[in-house]
Length: 369
Ligand SMILES: Cc1cc2nc3c(=O)[nH]c(=O)nc-3n(C[C@H](O)[C@H](O)[C@H](O)COP(=O)(O)OP(=O)(O)OC[C@H]3O[C@@H](n4cnc5c(N)ncnc54)[C@H](O)[C@@H]3O)c2cc1C
View 1: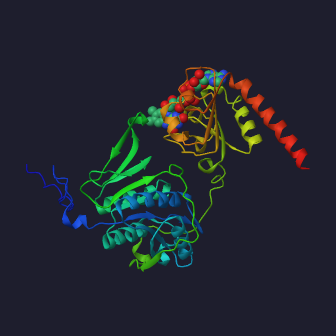
View 2: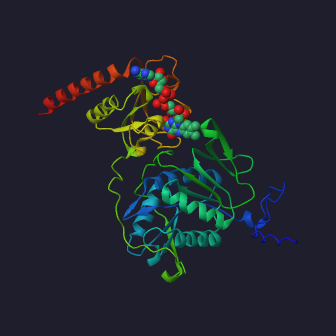
View 3: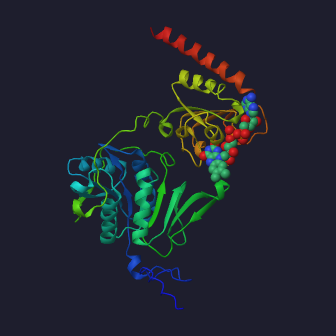
């Protein structure tokens, strides 16, 4: 019995086949660092500006421009987003306006972005590791047949190859690996919100803009956008952008004790975070998980109560300005990276802190009145 021949593999760029990791002449022409600007109902996601700031640093090392890629409907204020992108460090904005680009859908956005890449040939393409960014980055990378490194924690230029060295956790967060796309272009990476610092805006910075068309009509698109129904719970918990976070771990012992974490957060005007085991036990909502498989946070103050400080938790909170750890075990790993350590029982320390802060706040209010 003869077997049917296997379907032909899609044509791939020849550079990088086998052991040859040299870029082809065609791919050497790819220049510039691009950032996909994610926006929704009039607001740009802050991760896009964090990435423009990071792109600026990479582009300065490569001696090339930073471009903002802005796709959307004609009435969505794309020019305003371009001006904002310039203030954060972009030199140029590629704008694509089309009625079918109003509201995110994978198909038209993939076509728009891949068409722009094929036409203008950027060296590096960065997207936020948000729901939208992850969806788009995957389909754009597979369409362009190039490499994508997801959820990066560090981006730099390798001094030898001048390639993007994209670092991310691997093996369950126990190791970091640095990935380079040597033989394909563009080099793509996604980065989660708050992993990179927010750049300072400079209102005097300006840039240039150019417009491209999509060349796709509604009848060619399979998915239809019928309505927008806001998630009643979305934006209620905004851990990545909170200035103060009080987090609890399994050392809180019971969901009832976890209320002590909520009380301190309330008095400080902060948010509540948690470790993965607390989320898995159903003590708090999944949106409160801090860490590798949860949220990355960058608060001014992070109070960790009854948290051991496992590496998977650490990667999500170590960028905080000040970390205060409360733990009964003097050898807990959290004390290796906390700025202040309190060796004690969280069930006693948390109410004491809540009381002290509440009293201090009441005194301040009386002084102001
Ligand atoms: C692939 C993968 C992804 C993961 N992703 C995440 C993630 O995103 N976020 C995350 O948090 N974890 C994550 N984890 C789990 C992580 O490895 C740890 O198991 C987890 O962070 C530990 O949570 P914990 O500190 O609450 O619990 P434990 O490790 O059990 O620590 C409890 C701590 O409380 C202290 N303690 C006990 N009693 C008291 C008390 N009365 N007062 C004060 N302290 C007390 C103990 O000394 C101990 O240090 C992941 C694991 C894997 C394998």
